[in-house]
Length: 205
Image 1 (cartoon, rainbow, N blue to C red):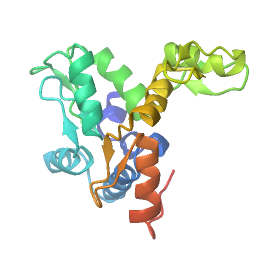
Image 2 (cartoon, rainbow, N blue to C red):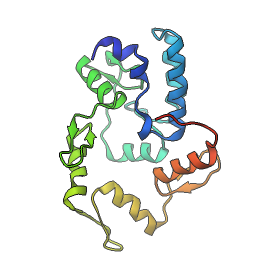
Image 3 (cartoon, one colour):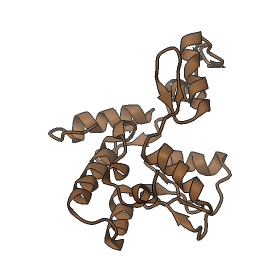
């Protein structure tokens, strides 16, 4: 991975967007098309990235941006995020910055270029982190270590259990910014936005 690809490549700028919300996909596609026709070694594009792509809920301490306020609050509550200050190596695709160039390269590979070196031997699905692969392997092994205390149903991941528990609690933390409707999971929220508010748009994968 060259320094040029970190800072200047439109292919680097447009990640595989299937894991992003529909609104964020549109923002990436819009800026990607601009970068195909204009030079990118310009501060205007850096500001444009910050204003358009990174609109969301940003952590004031570490600079991470979250699509949903729920995830920002969870991040502040459960993680020990560190103030990044004026670190030398800054990612131009998001607010993150790093003390070492190698950390920046790894960040770009995993986050923006969707580098997935950990491959499941059973089905071929790939993951950026070994911990994610280990969670996936439970699908094949049948292991379900996370149990709902309300109904006894078991799940392969704690995140799936948390979403399930909202069926019992009635919690719906994901709110549509367009119509105000709320949802128990971000997947249900994104599906609503895609089907209700983005009709007529072609989302590129």
